[in-house]
Length: 448
Ligand SMILES: Cc1cc2nc3c(=O)[nH]c(=O)nc-3n(C[C@H](O)[C@H](O)[C@H](O)COP(=O)(O)OP(=O)(O)OC[C@H]3O[C@@H](n4cnc5c(N)ncnc54)[C@H](O)[C@@H]3O)c2cc1C
Image (cartoon, rainbow, N blue to C red; front, side):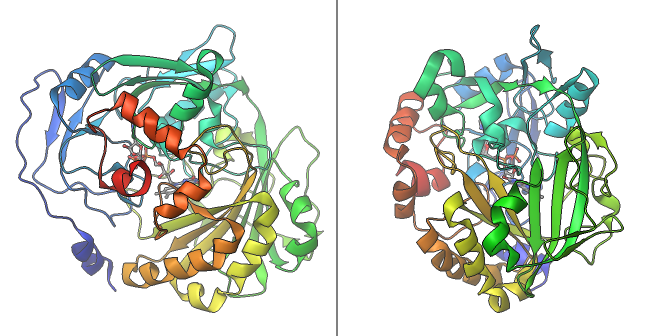
């Protein structure tokens, strides 16, 4: 199906736009529709208030009965949707404040990692990890437990040591890892359900350089006996395949430049690439971060794509499933058996490792995980039929979907995977008793 037809079918009905009377905020009341990055979702309203300060965000939260914070719109499902009003802090002044001891940085929640990272590097600091692309907002990324790769690296939310949010009654609440214990662990992967985040504090470490090497055509069978070795080969490791051959097409190994370099010409049957590659082997690597062992700052090696390259929209759909680390190889082999079914619909598929954390709604809550990610062609009728098949195949391995991507899993399943779900619901009720921040996605999947 052509993308245009697909978009038309998936578009929600528009509500009539009207102008916001709140003079102190810039309000985009656009006649045109508001879409997510991929263009597969037209939000149920285009009423978007742009808050430039905490005070403005507070006024907006108090003013509306229903309001939803919007980040950089990179989610593929309706977790961010509302049919009432959006408020966004993306584009507000960045206010980057590095603590005097250099151990943390506090930022405006709407800042993008790609804006923050070069500044941190210039000042001598680094974050522990980044996602595959740097164009996402900090608040939106931590909301859905966005992750990069690295068996010793927790997801991006695991770097949060403090946050500030506006709860439903307009109160500004601050929570920190140091003083708020379990309440803090509940609030970090917030799913947009607790309030409007205004500030986030992130752990820092001294800056470092990284290299990136890519290996081609590793026989899938090597994963059976060498999965741990492969994951331990770098600071961050990604395996790319379309499951249509008996090989992992590309293994991306990202290493600290000050660590012993893993750059053998042959490794577990794979061959060191002799030119930069794109995760989809047929595509040009022009927009990919530098490979071939060229050292560069952490923020120009951890993401697969360059910050300077800004894809305004993407002709793709994404789904991703987390399995406990001990089930990883069996789950990967189970997906490989679906190769003929999923292959024709795939652009690529990626396997990454993520360390355990203590964040209640994180898919890696108290367990190391491996993710199996699917970048699908933008063919929703085809993909929507495949998701239940993929989920059935992964069910024996205790798979749970990424909160920001497409899935078909029944809501009842989440109770099995998230032991803290009942307490998270109570927390949402405490901060948002009237359901100001709720939407249909939250009602169906999480808050009940
Ligand atoms: C091309 C592409 C590549 C991706 N790569 C990765 C990857 O490598 N790893 C990975 O894990 N994910 C990845 N994702 C998924 C993406 O990281 C998540 O969907 C993330 O949540 C997007 O953040 P956002 O700012 O766009 O959030 P949005 O989609 O705008 O919102 C997400 C949620 O955050 C809430 N929210 C946003 N801002 C606030 C705020 N200020 N206060 C309260 N709630 C807020 C929203 O209400 C919503 O619930 C990718 C997505 C795309 C499109």
